[in-house]
Length: 415
Image (cartoon, rainbow, N blue to C red; front, side, top):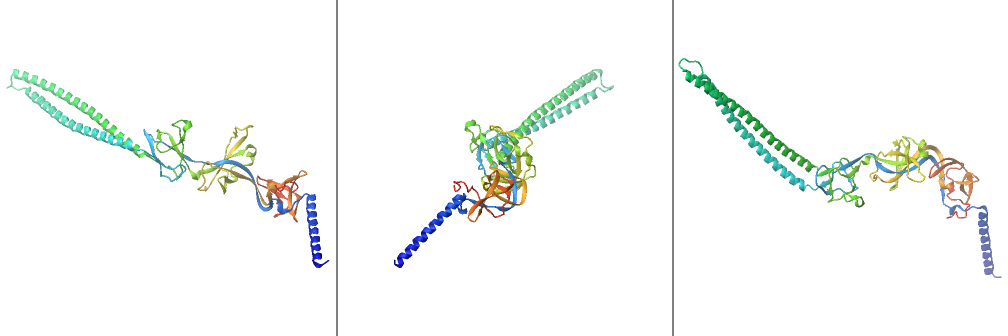
């Protein structure tokens, strides 16, 4: 046999030996019920502070919110409005109404005020003239009385007939004086009545002008605080056609138009199960999570817990308490109504060995983890120290151990 044939035979023999060795290795692994470390999802046991938490769901709410209502002005129609969900600063215009009707009313009211003031001024001048004339007539009447009284004085040169005539003239003069005094009092009362009536008309016209000017100032609604403006639904067309207010809508006095929540007062409002109520309290540390911004982990504390439990409408009904966690410096991207939750820290274990919750299995009634060692997994009994929805604090394995996240002994472990 030549050299080439000997080399080919040796190569075939080595290939067969390698195949038999690989088959034996697979058989041994199958017999042991384990798999190699590269075929399963794994994680490493980490050492550090372990937080035992209670996880609950809720949504963001603003502890302080300001409602915006339509002013007490008739026939309002929206001419301009800020965008819904837009951030507005304190004092910025939120809604502007059509002011053309009010402007026309203001012109009319000012004209009525000018006319009323002119009538009052004319009456004042006429009263002054009438008063001067009455005063002159009264002076003349008093003069005639005094003159007639002098004619009745005792005098030897005056005859009895003349004296009698003088007394008659005195009586007539005194009666004229009384009539003049009565007329003057009547004119004074009549002038005062007309003056009061015209003054009231002038004051009413002036008040109408002031009211109309006030309404002109209410044609724009300004934000009472900085925040996000949210327009409420307009039910003028019925509940089935209710849509948020828009430009062109007619509104009535006192209607609720919008709401501006105070973004600095955001708090997470979450439901805590009745069974967990005894393990939480005001002041407990909390990590707030928001579904829309999963990268945020906001540390805060529980600021309030509802004193009474709420009964759910589910079947079977359950009871829960509401826990509130105020955010100290809210992220500007956060908005009221965002869904999320919070992790309430009920215990801290320093320097704990923790593994994912999926890495703990049960073998013969005991908790075990499958630790990777020399290319295979073997079960290790551990002691559970604490648990939360994501991780478990254990003892019995060193930090940095590689553990399997699925049971290696199951046939579908790879899946």
